[in-house]
Length: 162
Length: 216
Ligand code: SF4
Image (cartoon, rainbow over all chains, first blue to last red; front, side, top):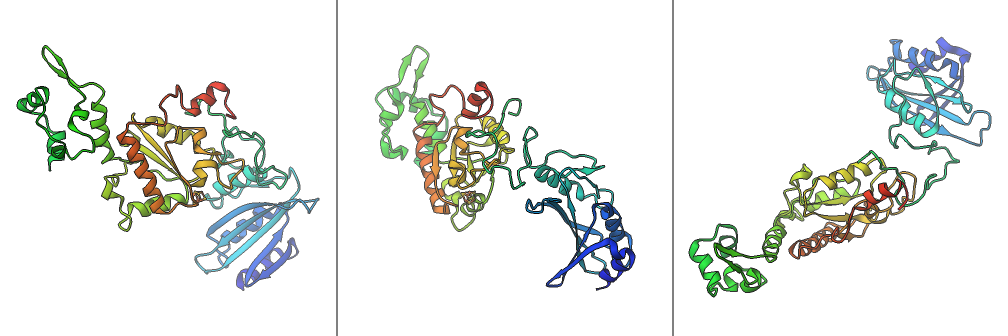
């Protein structure tokens, strides 16, 4: 795959790991290289990933040093190929935003922050997206209780909302 | 048809006189399931005319029950079955319900079709309050009734903790026939002028606010 060759030539050892499952290519990079790798993916004409399919977070508590993961799914309409780029983060570690490359990352990063507490530095509007503004906690972390932290049938403060 | 002629045009002088002076109108003329006497409920004669207190509600209820317009509003997967009921196969336009209004101000009630997330809850309450009285609410599906399996941080545990509900239609999702049956029950309540909010001073959502916000 030419995408793989282009990336490997440019970044070499900085791509920490490469996996391929049923023809789906994925690279793991360090958080410091996140923005550099992704901007190369978009701007190099051999890769030309003009669309960010989705960007999502993940929580893997069994990996104690770096329990969080962020995955970017890229798609190139020019060449018709796809790529996944992943990175692992420790609790509290931040990641630069990629809204400058793909504005659609705005919502994805808001959701990843809301659900996992992964902060994206430089994000223009990091607010809660799916839960209410007074919500506390990051619900997709594995240690979050499923029934929430409030309880009762009306799990919401309706004052000033209706 | 006697029904529409008799009920919805302005009565002529001779007809009013007929009612006041011993009613030659017959039950068959009106095609009602109540007799004209009962319907007109003993008119009260005043110097300038007649008044028909209370029983007018029954005429209105009868008329409303044939044109119940629900709010065009779906929350989750149940709304797909609601659309099926609106479509040609199940065809709720047979019962005068096909005109689903996109504005709450033109609707007679709402079908809460699906689970209601906590972020959506204030909007549901607002829509409910924007529907003019009288109004009826049908909770469709286990999610609207009780939250179903979603006993989670993000789902309202039963829409009746926010707004008063008239009819519950269980199922996940209920088949269109079940929703139809529920709407028939709503029609019965419309005819009888019964509302879920009868006897309530405030809807549950307002109660929750008064009590301090969360839990009920
Ligand atoms: S009751 Fe079932 S079909 Fe209806 S909204 Fe809930 S999960 Fe979906």
